[in-house]
Length: 104
Image (cartoon, rainbow, N blue to C red; front, top):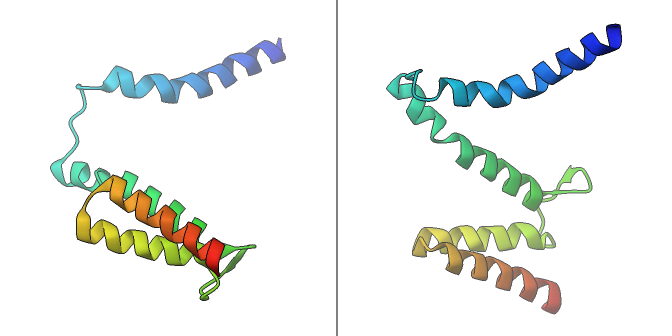
């Protein structure tokens, strides 16, 4: 009987967090400052993933001229600030990374 209770509790723990937001959607109103703060969560998560990918090599921080990922990320960041166009930013970052890998 303990196994069935364990399975039921695991199912509850798995599906309750998935079901709860749908059940409460439209019924719970968040304060405006909290809504504004939550708008930045995807940007912060994506930035942390990109920064870790570009700056960490073999478990250590790599800030050197040989870190092609970081250089391409900086170029892509500059292009994004100047153009505000996603496609151009991606092409510039990939082209920069490819040229660094091929020619250096």
